[in-house]
Length: 135
Image 1 (tube, rainbow, N blue to C red):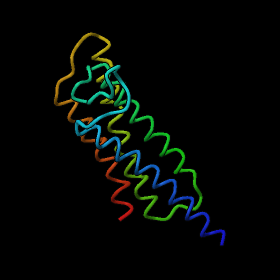
Image 2 (cartoon, helix red, strand yellow):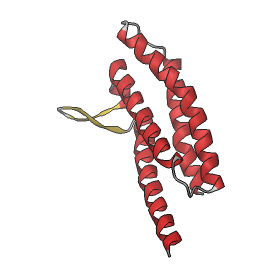
Image 3 (cartoon, rainbow, N blue to C red):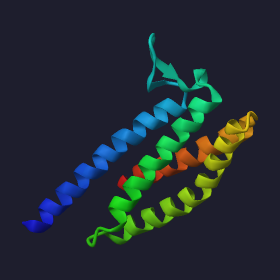
């Protein structure tokens, strides 16, 4: 019975995580994002580069927190471990790009669309791992 409770708890955590990732994916696609103006939520396409930098970092931090919470679990399956290894690989790749993006903004430069596209693709790769891992 204990095993079933652990599995249900894990499934609940994964379901909540997937829901958050789905919201992030919708936001990346230009849908409404949480937060930003007096007139209502702001679309990613309407964000300033500084707002995008904060948004990218927020998504990264949420992914990092999720990774750290999952990696310490002693009852991970081999499939879950594989997903976490891939997640870590992508996180290691995306962090310096987000950091560089924010350094450009802080210095007054405007990052290229190619850099934004690279960050968005890596974030999509991260969120896709969880969805693929559940199929």
